[in-house]
Image 1 (cartoon, rainbow, N blue to C red):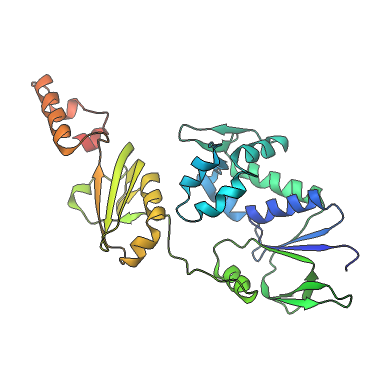
Image 2: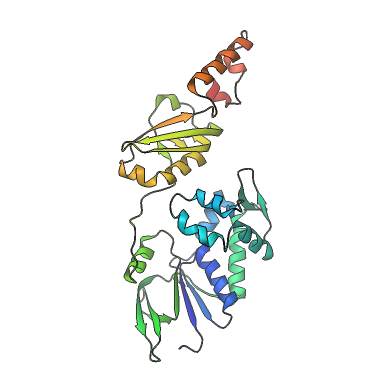
Length: 310
């Protein structure tokens, strides 16, 4: 047994830092090291939420919270009863970061700066004695037996040096290097597929509408293999097709279905949620009769964006 137990954390992102901080708080005598392959830890934190960092979601019911996860919701239900967004908010406020809730339930720092979150995690980790090794890629990891007969992890760095740790935590995100390390330790890896992507659509009806945004629409996607997925939310028309939260959520829930159908599907967009084609048509006819002498572009129905309405 090492005199000072060492905990090695592979990955210097939000998960790695939070794990290191938690381990340091619960094991003050341990030596805790974060290994980050790049020179910039917490890089994804700094660009998340458009540089504002959407910290968590203002949903405190674990049963409702897991519904936001396309895969793994069953596995997350238990952990969310131990630590959930309410605990995340309390943790950051305890560490001097004030947060705010926006209309879509996303939670941001009041500074609107991701740097506030990154600084908090870095400052807290360093204050607890966590060591951060940047530019330190891991070549391989193996289980070994120490001279005292204890099982340890032997970590081989990219430069050939080796270090040992009593405990190891992989917090490498979706990168293939982390998958490779996990696989070498006996874990089974489910092949990943793209998720959270925008839709490329060649449709003349979208021409000249790039930049038009909708607060609330309904999407219905039917892939070539016959599976159907629905999603609601805000939408953005781009020069290549469709984007925005509703599209990203739809791509997340349909990630494997779309992959299996070679990303070919039929998308139906309801710009007037709550209406069918028939009731929408009746609404437009009623609108026309109420404004018989006005130009169409000078009067709008259902708060649709002006450029789209025209």
